[in-house]
Structures are given as structure tokens and as C-alpha cells.
Image 1 (tube, rainbow, N blue to C red):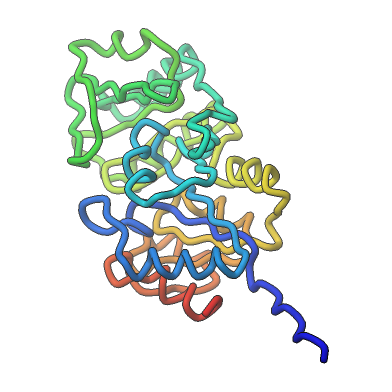
Image 2: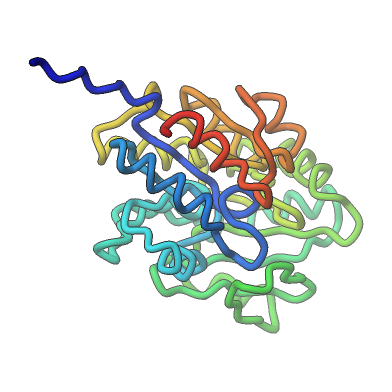
Length: 272
């Protein structure tokens, strides 16, 4: 008697954004999403979290999820081995370049409010004058002067404008300094500057290579324009129902919202 052939995995790698995608309100993952990911892993698929948050701002989520794989953090600038508690890869943003980029942006739109994420596994997010922190679960340190933001190596700069909305600020900043840095709109009130050539696709490609996997075997889930490079790289991109219109425009399919377990709906269809 011969055994039945093993069913080929629909995708060997599942890449999920966190905020607005896998996470629900309060930085939580639903039981249904947790179970769907467990089923996919049991079938042989690997899961990589790909987030704009730097490592220090995501470790508590990974611990709560019981996650032990690789995490791509800081918009692709960092690859973190969760089980080992070790940074495998990290690209800093040159601080002089960041200041030049800010100067060019402010010459175009007037004053912007600024925060930075420092380099390192335990580093702080520094908040400059005027910058409003919208996420209640992320630890921050407020500094009195913008000059204080540059006192140690950083991996990205976060911008807010008192009048322009996120899309307009992103468009203008990209037009002014897009040849110097990568400009990303990562979420509400979250326009960011990263090192040139760094995005979620570059980080995911590096992490996937560690696992011996590539784009052709990857399904990616996201909700914001910073997920566009990841969708372009992956074989299949799934936008959440709550996703930004720019991401929906390039997605291969649209699922339910993060609050309605949109990731679980797709994984249950593929791996059940």
C-alpha cells in the first residue's frame, strides 16, 4: 500500500505586517488568527513578521504571541532573531543625511515635528518638540531640543506636519528628498525617512534567504503604503479591508479587516 503524496504548500512563507493587519486594538492577536497561523505552521509554512516598528517597540508583542521566528523591523532596516534575542542585521540612517533631508523638506513645507528611533535592541524612541505620539503602547522619551535627537545612532526619522495630511506630506517629502532617503507613509500620523534602499521588501528578502525561501513562495499581508514594496516582491499580496487605497490598488486580493480576522480567513482557506 502506497501512502498518498504530500500536498504542496500553497505558500511556504507567510509575511504579515502588525499594526492594522495582524494586530487588533490594544496590540492583541485574536484566538482565531493565532490558530490559523498555527495550522499553517503545522502544514510546514514559515511565518515572518514584517513591521515598521523597530525591535524595542515590538518585542512585547512577539512575547505575547509566543513568536520565536525572525522579525523584520524598522521598515526593513532590521532583521531580528526572536528566539536568540539577537539582531542579525541592522542598517542605521546617517544622522547628517537625516538633518539635510529635514532641512530640504522644511524649506518646502515649513516646520515639521520630528521623532527618531535609535539603533539597538533596547534603544528608545526620542520625541522632539511638537511631535504628538498617537500610539498608546509604545515607550518614548521626550527631549527638549531637536538637536538632542541626534545624540546616538538612529535607524529612522518620523515626521508630522501641523497642517498637511499624511499623504500630502509624503508626496512632497518624496519629491524633495526621495533621491537621498526612502520616504514612507506607514500609518496615521506616521511619515518616515529610512536609509536609501531600505524598505520592507529588502528586509523580507534578507530574512527569507536565511530560511532558504524566496519571493515565489511568499504570501504577504498588509494595510499601508509601506507594504507596497513587500507586495511587489511577494508572489501574492493580500490587503486588509481597512487598507490604504494605494495598497489596495496593487493587491492581488482584499480580505476582511484586522478586527474581523482577515488574515485568518485567508489562511483557513489555504491551509485547512
